[in-house]
Image (tube, rainbow, N blue to C red; front, side, top):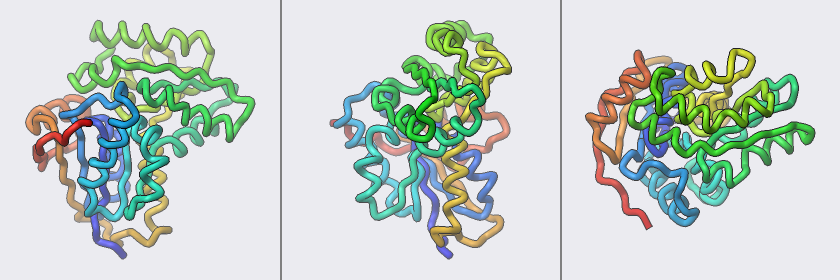
Length: 270
């Protein structure tokens, strides 16, 4: 038994897609969320900056019993170096989502969309090809998605959303994929608009959801469960404006209660 909290962090609001799964599956666990909105987006930054920022994010959650880096960019660029030396177990989003994408695809034509840093890092593609060398994988960077989502723009009816989806996902359509891995945890918030463009024949895989499920499954085996069935607390921290964080979270994820939001000063950037 371990009554310490679970820590979750992301560059902003996207990790709430993983947080939502964790709160539903682990009602008895205390969970702390940190959204680094003050330094968002992460996807276009240099590797040295990302390493520095990811270390600060992990340090901020140092009281946690384990941490989920609910960020594809951090999972790709920083965790291979930082996770092995961390005193706290740190989970990423790459392997769980890549495995599920391979399991779900029937024609082995799979798309991956993520930030520029994640696509350039190639980790999703590497893991999927290790699992299934014959898979045809089309990877596309979508740098406009996160800023749109952080502004609360996710509707199919939004012109900026429609234009960005057409710009990036036309290549996915042409590749005839039957499975699309949403390699940034923000992207499921555009899921309805993405599905409207791609059609019902393409299954969407949420990296945040799959990583959260893996964490839940690992909790007992690592002897880190609190053993409680209810009563878990949720705390939210943001390096952006806390009122704006709450307001946009409420619009993006209706029905998901985001309260107890505390603003902190943004950490430095190298």
